[in-house]
Image (cartoon, one colour):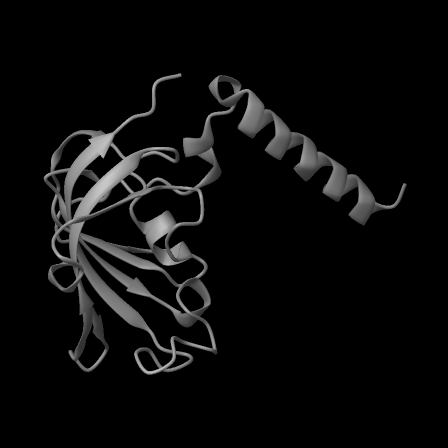
Length: 156
């Protein structure tokens, strides 16, 4: 068995265990946990920049949590391209299952309820070189201000 096959088998086993036996896989350890201090920015190797404006309280978000947020998305020049108010109010989604761009998946980990966080997301963790037709040009760095309203933990 070559290395690529071995890695593929290992990843497949991890995914199967995570799906069928989630209580045995600490999914929150698979993504970086940003426990930032208000006003201090952290940047990942992938170029995601995370800044907590307001820390919030309680336990931080982990993979598998359903979160409810308000947000405003802007380009680097400050132009707003989207906001939760355009979606009819707060939006809810589950972290770690691919419902949102990778910049959000990674950038919301560790965020606490009531917190407000700014995410500066490079194209590689956003919409890449293709963008979103008519809304987001390819290779766009995106800036989101996110307010975490609620965290719902799944029951195991």
